[in-house]
Amino acid sequence: MPKVLMALVITTVLLVPAVAAGDQLATLNLGEKASYWGPVFFHYVPSLTKIINQPIPNEAGIKEVRVASLRLSPTSVDTLLVDYTEGPSADPGFIISLVGKCGPQPLGRAINGLDLEAPGDGYFYVRGHTDSWFDMRRKFTVEAGNLHEVKQPFYYVGLETRTLKQVHLYSTQGCYEMIGWIEKGAPVTVVLSDGCTFLLKTEHDILGWWRPQNMSQQSAEEIEGIYYKGD
Image (cartoon, rainbow, N blue to C red; front, side):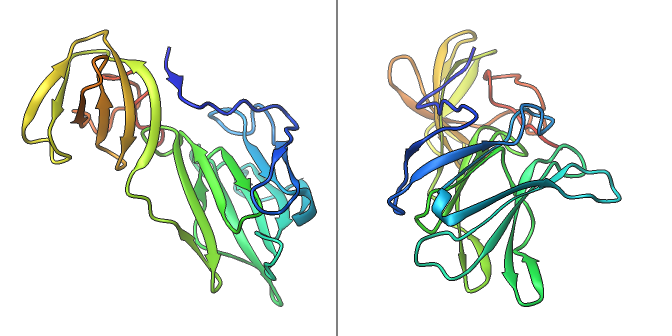
């Protein structure tokens, strides 16, 4: 079975040091069956957050929850709303809205994920294997009334797993020059990704780039745990 490096162990209520607010993080579990893919969590600073945790009725019958209102940092003057939505076709994510004089204004489309953290440092951190190839970690902030993703050079994967068939390794992300392969059933570490190409580490600590042969696979075909979960 795949093992995620530095895995986060979560209980219904979890207390850990906050980054910047001088407070402690608490965790709201929205339910073990909150999404088609499993439980959904929201981590927050109590002094900056008001938990609401109430369903949002809608004619489409999509599961949606008004999770909380909050400020992103102790110095922030903006009040934000966090809503969870299961999406129209098992696309779980979080909708961030800015509370203004005319009511809440959604800041773009939902952020896909199953785990949202607002630690009081001015940022949202989201993760989850949903509409992605792996448990993707991303960082967002709100500036001038807009929600922005903080650009990363790569996405960390950190998955210790095994190959399901022989996979080829390449010298660059373009995957033109093959430098070796990993046999079926061998251990492999998926280190990072640009979203669809992956840097692998062999059991001999050799690095190489790999790209799935079938970019639409919705179950693992080449490396256990790496497949597109979504539609």
